[in-house]
Image (cartoon, rainbow, N blue to C red):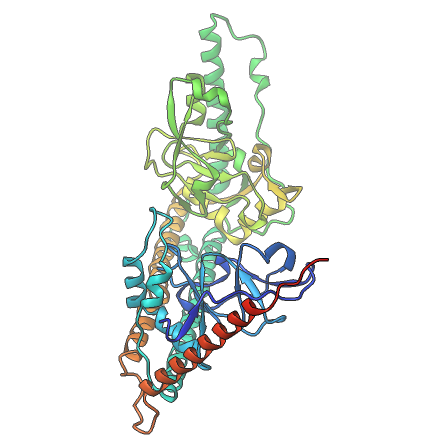
Length: 508
């Protein structure tokens, strides 16, 4: 490699003012698999002139640290102004010793076979392993005649462009699937998905009948709880104790769309119990009962991730309120991004016992009331999302919900059998779309990456383009580069000797 490139060439000392903005490239600004570099970032010269890697246009950047090297963080520095930049110290800078070699070298080191060898020769502690400079200098890459290099690189880039077009088409298809899934949810909660089923299955209980029954059961449950409290204290219920019952607030239907016949609007509070979770504080470390608990980081749209679940101390009197049951909905209370506020997913009981923190609002639907999966479809639907965003407030950039705001959210209430039918149809259609989406992600990810590597393999085996016997042999090119390098070494040596012979200036 050192015959073809100068690795980490000597730095120049530019005559620039400290405030001059220069390109700065941290590691995240170089894409994986040699897919590009972002040179839009600027920093003042004074802040980067020491301690960072220096490069110029045409240099090849090669990440030396794990896992960036294995992931193919490689880039060619494009034209930049001024023609000097700085970046992460975890880059090797490879400066070609001849014009036109930059892309050939970059594609050579982008091959998975080359990176595998580099990985096998890494040194250092786990998590901080790096490719040694001496190994990179001694590493070998194929060298084709210069005209053939140009033909091969042109063919690689032509094939890669076609692959990128295919990936773009797959991404468009993926976006269409997301829109399709949103339209399925919309059709489900608007009654269009079950329109034919509804004609064939007249309801024996309308949504309004269901709501009245839910409210009656809700009040009956409250009264039973109050009587139990009186009994536990050895007291008789006082006169008019039932008058203390607070009816849940009815929905404000102004601005809400008309519902199918037999449906009605309700509030989340009318058809479910809404509660908060555990507040994290130092005193909980002293509690003897410790349970796993879910945080905001565990809850996404229709997905609960359990790869990072922590534990928290819980008192016995809190258990009834914070323990999760299968079917509970968890709503994210606050987020810095408006499109993430109110993320909601259904708990399936995958980890029991388990509780939740106070930044997750729990919505529990009684078995005889609105099905929790039905409510989830509503909160995930486009109109449901808009109702959530409409009530979320923003303070210092943080969008927040509260228990009272969640309780007041409207929800369409269909007859129970129709809810079950809508959930079944929506889940089946969404699952089918999810399967296709998974296939698209595989095509756009692993398979496309494998195709890119297959193209590179053929290219550097000489099987991608035909060879031309009239091309100057690669050995002649290599000898010319070596000769020019030898002349440059002699020139530098003469300059060093001349500097040593120059008399030192004396201060009078």
